[in-house]
View 1 (cartoon, rainbow, N blue to C red):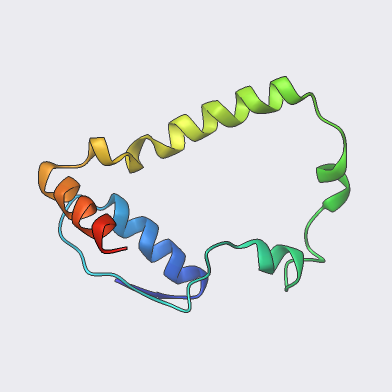
View 2: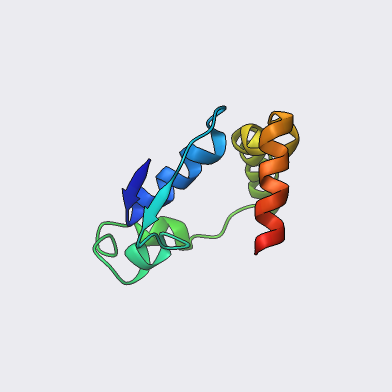
Length: 95
């Protein structure tokens, strides 16, 4: 699987969740999409005013926690097969 720029990020996320063996090659993949939203093409398309309004922190944190729990459950290493867990451990040692 291969992807360029943000496609490289999506290729990595897909490969991390894919249950079988899969080769992935991210090309010029950023660590974050923030540059596109803050400095790039999406800067003018982002509704910054609503994002800058005050929010109830307790409500925001609870909502973010629920969302992260639902979203990230599939990415937990513990949910992977024994072989994939071993692959992750080997990869982590190389970094």
